[in-house]
Image 1 (cartoon, rainbow, N blue to C red):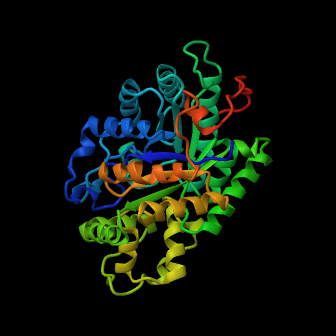
Image 2: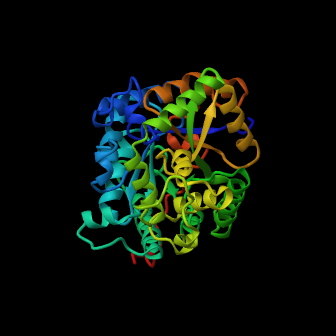
Length: 410
């Protein structure tokens, strides 16, 4: 069978755009209702997507006064979705910095069992001081130490799954997903990830990233073909070019300025106070990506835009629209399918973690208009051929063997 796309939908509160909750016809408090998540998951299953994806941070985000946030713990939401669906994969984000490995392994392992083998774990190290303070720490752990802990933590969890003697899973164990494009993140992905959630604006860079991850997997004795790379893709769909552009312009207008500035300041680790929207961000405020704290992935993405285009602060805020740095494609269903097909055939992606502009309307447009166009081109499945997430992704069922005792937490 020809190679086909893998598609997840990222249910990110009311949509990935910072002003999504203010979009006409959208319930601004939808992310505080469980039906918001289960309804989208049912639609994703009808569209035969690989999985739903839930982002999360174990923190009380102060930006909630400018934008509603995700309100439920991911495994709780996924358990509810599992009870109301049969095939769709269930991927949740859980921090390696602020959880206990044994407890997390049991929780996800049990969920994988009761869902019939549909669970994936998105390993993140959780950037930012807000989460650190939520756990009684003065500041976040240093970037490299977060990733050292993540590697050991993941191996502990996988070993715990390997040692389970009850409640086995049809897919062997949950799929390990990893998000993080820093140097440390790429090494972690090469070592442990079966799915990589990446962020890139440029096709050539994305292709090089995928090649690097696959080469790294081979260096660690893994099958490079058993690593699926899914860049984030924000979509703004319109029936015509004019309709799509008008929707994007309205979303830009709806972005709360304080939210956009606060999020960008957090990504860059600098204060934007006193900077004019009409001037570029002074370059001397920006350090090289490998020296940045917080999320180096999104720091690099934003700095690349600044280095390449030298936008004014106002133009940069519009370009990101509070979405953080994932690539945004605006157009008709055919234009968006063209973009997806170009990246896929160029070897820059195995599929995408789709992040609709507004939920649920943006996903309705994607599932109802873009997916059929991809299917017409022979790029996406017409029906499920397996019952597990691992099966949807074309990943092998791992051989369950105990992990050597010398691999311990650091």
